[in-house]
Image (cartoon, rainbow, N blue to C red):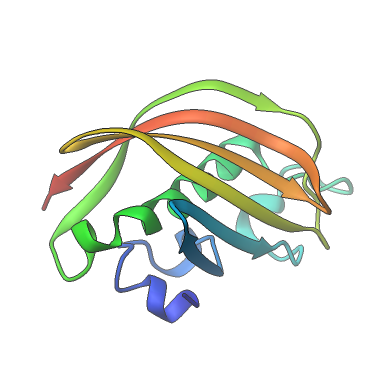
Length: 139
């Protein structure tokens, strides 16, 4: 899915739709985002030495994971809301010029609650990993 197709699944818009493409393959959601350096969250983090904030990396993982629930979300008034982040580890910095590739799997579903694990890589090197949960809330 490209970013326009993702808008049919994700409610995020403008600066908060972070992933640029994603697809599901054998139960694994794979996404990517190119960090061009002009992102709003880099302007103050850190001047002269921009690094993607960890919380934004976690959001990128979560948005990628939502592709696994496209059938639950497409065309419905549902908001995916974080309910927890666990075992988050940041291994390497993500900087302008990097393309973050994400891999996420659902580990458990108790609708409306879903649990997932995700990893983010740049050039094949692990940058972030996390377990997280979210709820599909009706609007």
